[in-house]
Length: 237
View 1 (cartoon, one colour):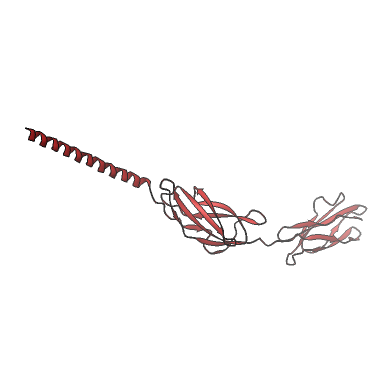
View 2 (view 1 turned 45 degrees about the horizontal axis):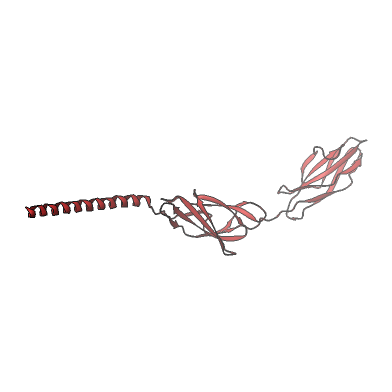
């Protein structure tokens, strides 16, 4: 009888142990599956702009020394945010813009410099990241400066009765610039509506009523729409 009880107790203990082991293993498998779903490895981004080895990125001029450059890259799987790292290759200084939620961002950079850049995708759950390759580009230097035309120098009008010939001298510091002129003539102050515009020579004629005092001036304009006004001159007719 004692032998039977002893055998029964041993059997129950063994079954309990097996059940306990089965449950633990099952839990491990389930947890492993859940962890595997949550902890994904983000993909490596592909850089799209600025293009690698681009020799003259323009950007958007921000001020006299800097331009705003738009960086973009491909979206990657299992990614929450991106970090963009860029290096000024003239000074070898490196900066990183973190926690970018989309696949593009804008950064203001000094012009006339070559930069290297890369992007890292971040999975916030796994704390894992994957990096792109590195691209380089040259940001265009200061745009060429175009000077304003010099103020035209007015000559005394020549008249024959009411027919008046206006002449002046126009000049631009940029010798390649072509100038056009606008003539203002009135009896008030020389600042009223122009009477002739788009003149390509420094001379023109008008018929005016005699017995009056007139005021006149010239506006000089180059092909970049830079302009200047002459002094106002007065004459009697």
